[in-house]
Length: 443
Image 1 (cartoon, rainbow, N blue to C red):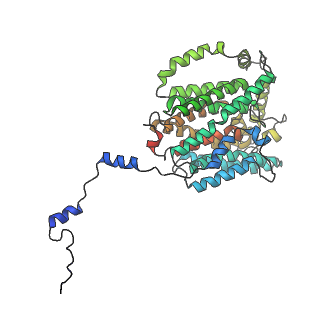
Image 2: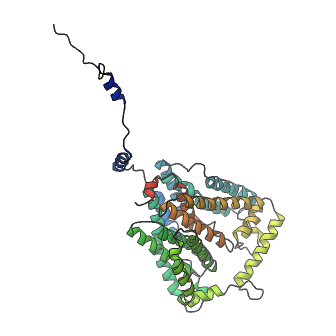
Image 3: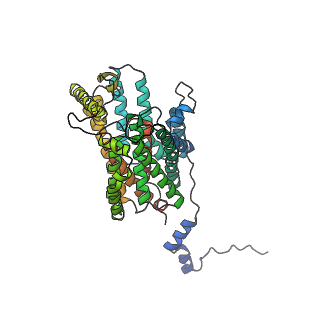
């Protein structure tokens, strides 16, 4: 009878061989990199409602003229924000951890609710809750974007969605301008583009943000030619809209934003001569009506135009209101409704914050602005040259500077068509820390 003999385990009679089998040589780094590069990139779910939401945000004329309003809260803003938020949860992304901006934004939103309750004792107008809701939806986009973006292709889709409306916005602006155009400036030239429910200043404020961002991306990021052409087109459209919105604040803000981008850019000396030539030649290039509009600004007594004079009056009323209610102010969205006898906004975000939010509100706003500034600086220092993270950080630093300056002479912070894209890019800048570096730079 033949017995079945089990084969010896490997290396049982060969100790040296057994020891060799347990030893594994490390994989060379070059081979490991090739294997990792050859591995298919993981594909994440796209938040398509968010892409469409970002595309439609500045197109208020389409929102009010073509998208049905069903009532009961079923309007464009509420429905698309709810769908975008649901899409963010489906995407499975998370907020960036240990970032002061996320905390500052949350504190700002909570105090806005508290300030609304304070103001309810003074004003019972039910429309205030809609103003608060719309404002907080715009701010909340910073969280929705972080939860929706999980790789650089998704981040680029959001940026493309923000750029695609600009040619259409420029077309609408041109049509409005040609209907009232004349050689010399007059108030009839003030146009509001696609901002059907807002004014020329708010429309120009949005265009300033997009112009500064496009300029930074164009000079600082290595990107495909087609995408570069889209960014350049977006920059041209935004600058065109700024010119013919005839907003003096926008003229100053965009100049400050572009200068900040140029000074913070590592390759600043490449464009400095060209920038100086353009600055010198600008008065000869600009339309006469634009030059007249800019030169109409004067703060000297007796030389002020009506708009400038009344702003001084509103600022005085706001300061007196702050002195009377220094801690919490009169409450969110109460100044124009109840405090100001002219029923006009302060045309100064900081004085309005003091009047409506008191010292607490001013400190909350200051903390938020400082957190945004330090976020831009931190990302700018750590980002790789020519990367998307570097370009977004550079653009947001310029947009932040323009926003801070613009709010001295108006409100560039409240209305969602104007400020929504700003918070979208804040979310992208926050999320850029957690995205793969290799995908942020085109090798």
